[in-house]
View 1 (cartoon, rainbow, N blue to C red):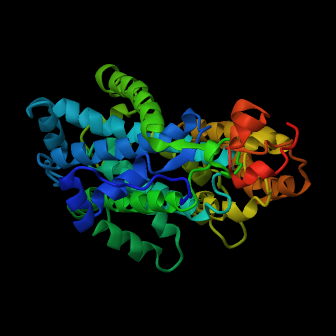
View 2: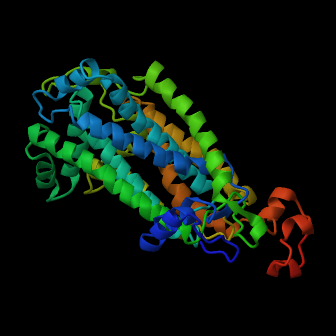
View 3: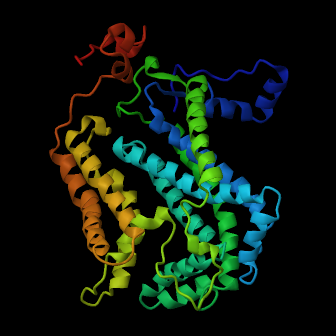
Length: 437
């Protein structure tokens, strides 16, 4: 984002000036996260979750590298090596619990980040590429999380791998060969464990690269804001540092308290007790479930219980599960409303808070419940609404909705309708009349 009033980096120290001439890294940092990056002045704490997601990725990479030094990707000793980390490695329990709970906390902040984008219209032009890269990051996270869940080689790890990879067999003609190629055999074993370990180690760095592109794309149009109004004058922005570095620092401190509570006092709260039983291919758990952050999509997968003409129910479930995620790619073109923020869209707001949010929560609850009634029926109804919301309700609402009056500028939304407060002296916009609030 380039503004005529943005400060340009001019290092004063001779060493920094020399470095900036040879390798403009100081200038890059200054323009990316420093005083040279103007940010809308009205960002609330929902905008903290992007920074929190980046922090959790760093935590996952650091703890993952340390765990990889002690883990053995062999089906005969994988479970024992995990227990060795917990019992014998210095601070191994802390590293392992930090990594396991870090995955859950990573998904928590990313889900909040996604729902913030959905509510405030952060996927709308000119920020479509930011949104699309975000969905790519989410898909990479899901793949990385699944492969990491297999590595402890407990009962739920083994059977989760068997069930999820078994979904590929639903694809006509190429499904079974594809499943065998993915596993390196007919069932999860050494080959599968080695492959999943390698990919689980590699994908976080792919995610890091995608996040760099995500942030790069963000800096072209600039950050969105709760009003959805674009920046008009200098008074609409403040430098990222020190204003938002301080705000993000406060949010990070509050988040670390919650994260520490999970690691030290409830490390197994979000896990499954069966994963503390060594993997046994001859003993099927009574209730096979993935990690909690997959539950909504697992509920969609299980919602299809009957064949439809020549299409098997299993194939329809697989297609619906992947479609539920891929649908997010088309969201910038499904929502055609010229107003971005849900704050000024009364009809959209009702369907969001009383339709989409309860629907996703219900799907999550049903996905973690046994595959029996009434959970299957409730999941089927919630699945139908999920697709109706994005494919039918959202386009119709975009066409018929009458938005509420919007502020003229970001500053007006913060300080009210005041010529001196709203418009910067000498700005081009200062010669224009300011509409009533």
